[in-house]
Image (tube, rainbow, N blue to C red; front, side, top):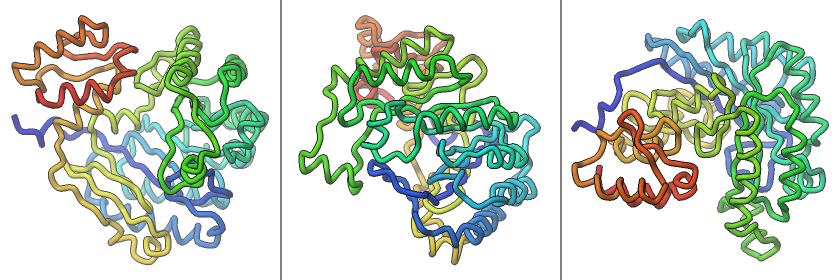
Length: 373
């Protein structure tokens, strides 16, 4: 089997990284900068110069995702300039999913109207938690009232596809505080919720504090209790867990993120952006000034022959669609049968699908199955 030709080329996704922030959260290890507002316009111009390298690409773009950083903190008019420039370079689908992240406290009525006029039809707001004290402890500068206002501003502007990002297993967090967040979200008009456990990333202020013993994280039992409090409430309200950490109402799964998990092509534009394009993975440098100076030579790493079979194993098991059985060697039958007998997996439509319990053990299952592809 040729592991470089898993799929025929389909529609493209675009990811655009906006690295500007008003303040940097102490747990964040994404490439972002504060105090660089004067560079915003030059940065958008550089992103469009990089995008122009792909002008000969004939495939249709059916998803755009603007992430950060904080896309909602950049100056008025720049998101529209970015969107118009991309539309001039690429073939844009008539049913484009166009997502932008936003901080709840920087998404005013005017910003919402500007984003909608740029074609954005899906917003992703980082709530993280509805508990005011915990928001301050994790360095967030918004309140739950800001979040509610941001959602209403999006709706008023005609953006009705809305995601809330939640975090759990936070330092100092209790199950009662998770319930507070669940109760807050219950009556809001959301179509999608992402729920991620905090990961302490090396090099962040949180990492240094954790190493010094300044706080502890919830243990594994409490971590799972918190997650299933969120998951059970969402599924009771018509959401489906279509990926390990993502829940959506029917028809509102994030098309762009599914490209990552299903090994479909996407182009990353901007500082530190990653791409998977024509069977290769590559990423851009993370120096803002260097990127602006020479966006046409921003690429720094290229993995010419990624192990696409292993990546398919790792990524497909994250989603409810599951993994095609044809990826496996003949001797995989025994470990697969054992997973099924232990309630960790099932087979449907010639695909191996992890159960909820199996998703909890996904890393171990990947290790188990990796010898059989």
